[in-house]
Length: 387
Image (cartoon, rainbow, N blue to C red; front, side, top):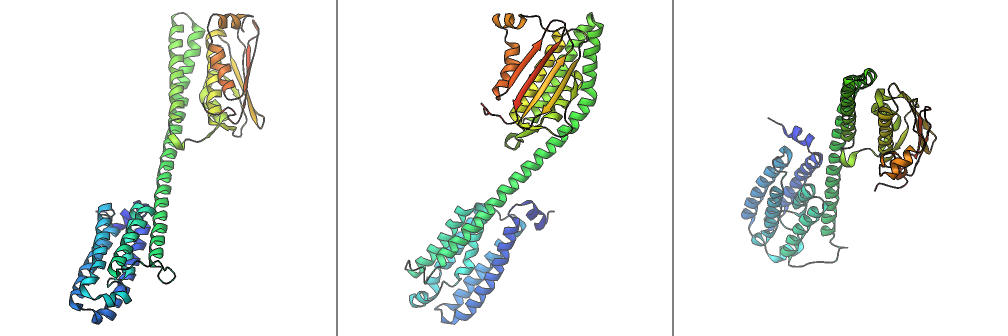
């Protein structure tokens, strides 16, 4: 069975509920002393003591409910406001108008402030102010006079202000708690992803990359198996990358490009990158990684068997440069222009278009038999903004 403290520890406003019950105890002591002092002046002292006992029992029940947790419900708090207001209105039954005009209601306004505090904790500033106004209106109704002379009577202002302040604190506590829980969940998912990524990278991806390279080297029927392995490797990398981008509003806005390239490229190219993190805008990183992936795909499919790829990442402060070079067959002169004229826009869209979409540039150098080199330059911040 859960104790009240265990429940409180999981409730972001638990400390406020506990503090409110301490105030309830102190206000009860004050109300009890007031009742002893003025009971003899009332027209119905016996009835007043009876009502005092009923209200004391209610307060004990409310305190237990809020401390244990089962009373932290809107209906429970609403009952407290209604009962408190009704007890204030009962002042007219136990005394005359002359006594009322010179005194507060018999339960004391301080004791009834607990209802306003409860509404503030359960519903925030608006609920707290509403509960405080309900208590204030009950007091004005009993007195039969709404006084705007706040210099002499500031009870309403103090009551509403205190309830609104407590409500604001409760709302903020819930917001911070929600953000903390979400951040903790994101951190846990990220840690688990990193673990799985390491295992996948060290096992499955390496095997698939080896099958792809060896299959292409052997040729013949094995080449088909190599292409299947390459496709599965590509899909698995995309799946890992897509999972990384699925954390919603709490996804980081920046990414370490150096680490991301090592994870994404794997054995498809020899990588040279700074040892320190190269932090860039998240969208810039995504577009660069996608462009590099397309360049390496072209190396795999068109550079020829045995072609090797080399990748260099440079951090120039405000921008980054990724150079991807291969020692393959190269691109014959006029080949790209012919492909574009035929409507095949693969390179233009998958590489150049991606880099230009974030305010960067892509430069290609190639010649038959001399391999191919791409130089991808991009700012660290997304200058064109997310579309």
